[in-house]
Length: 297
Length: 149
Image (cartoon, rainbow over all chains, first blue to last red; front, top):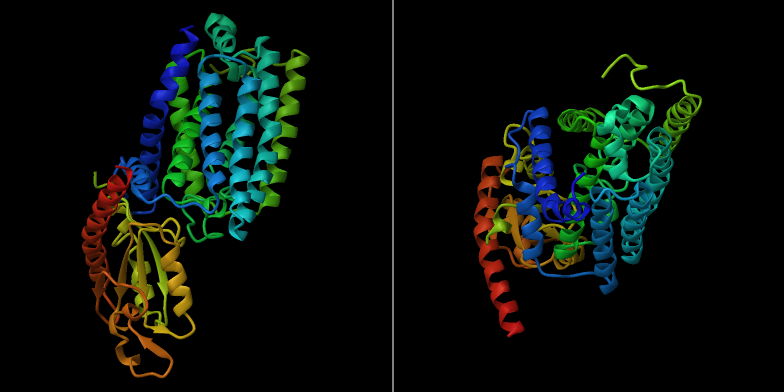
């Protein structure tokens, strides 16, 4: 295991670069799926730099502070994760970050942002049980909540984490669509539907404020891909391949699905957490699932 | 730094257009013309937009809406009048309810005449607007730099 500080510092410095490239490839692949040429791969960087060239104008000055907190807590979320620290702390920091973006949207007093903020709260509710159950599953399988020890367990002959908690992995991929704000669950704010509720959560943010939000989103993207990778950390290269496949599937689902209602998003996410999560946990506790049970990997 | 010319976001407003020009604006988004390859996004939100595309002349009912939308946009910003009605009022010029072209209400930077205007002409107009946008950005940066000193 590498020095925890190195992991955290590498994340803080390189996550926006990696996240921007992934987002750029995302837009290119999306365009090709729609039969278009699409923007350059570096487009997310142009967008963010442009936003910082714009005049700063906010409805209320404190919104800038809330968005800054959103950015800082997402950086902390990823830094804790890549430092190999407690996965529960990671999940709580992630939730706290999203609380700040919701407060920022409410503070703007815009009806569109209000609807976006309420939907974002619902999406947080939808996602949370699955994340907590995933953390619990990791603990039952490996005996530790610490990301570093979960990786060491896998490298030390414990088998890939996904062979212990395969159903939880499927559940996490399911809620990943909500977290990445991809269709059918791009309910609070959307990358594509720019006229949907104007822009939901981010309607009233402009210029540098929106730029901070976009950077935060890149940090979140890299952290979420890291979370998926953790299930395959015992074989790092396989993990990267799986992350690429999962992200491609997200793009495919994004482009082939219409937007769902929030009721469906909430119910299906909770149902996935309840069915997949609980079955997997019970099987794990009873000792039904052992690595290799599935006959793969 | 001229990132603003690589990532111009557009808000499109239908003044009192017959919808001909609006269809052509939306045609720019289709795979055939795909303006997203220039980084252009149709935002529908004045606070995110850099370029204000208006089709159709301005009438007495929407004059306040056009002014409000323009004022909500964050500097630097440019206005493109798309279609002959937006540039001068067109055939509706003498109508009792029409005030005339967009420039009777807000300053217009680029005029794109046509009835209905071709998508190629819209893209050409937007690309010309990018040059003006960059000049405005440089001016704004100079003013802000001066203010700080």
